[in-house]
Image (tube, rainbow, N blue to C red):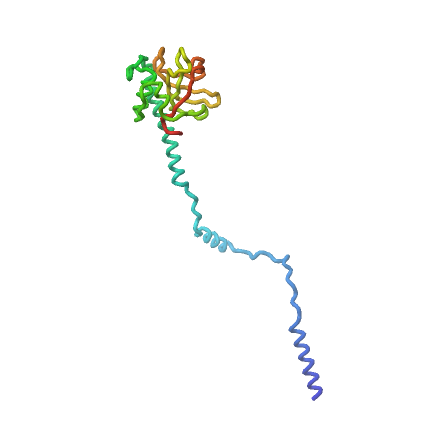
Length: 207
């Protein structure tokens, strides 16, 4: 009986030692990525193609309208200039309202009137119409530019329409009904006009 108990105890001890044996740790440095077959890669690519694409943000409605307005304003100024140039060479006559003869203020009135903009045919009142162009850097094509009289450079006596602006040189070209040459183009840096320039007004939309 005693021998049986000793044998039974020895067997239990062996079983308990086997159950608590520690497992050997895995060395992660020896792990390698699981190889993917070419078929598996194709399946993964197909899955990526089926993923919904993220829609790109569309420009706001206000931004689109603002761009359209900018383009239309530029196009309008070009149309005004092109129409004014149709009268190059038409002779000057004081008080003449066109189209065979013009004075300076009737010429600007006639050109802008063709596009639905009503100006009074007098230089002294046109300088109060539209919107003030505060500085040369704000000047744009289609603006009205004003000059002083021959005898009094500070009194309004002449008006023209800007056809181009050179911001680097600080000058602009303009078309006008000149007393001596009729409808013609000149540059603001000409001494006669440079010393008489008084300011500008805008009738057309801002570019």
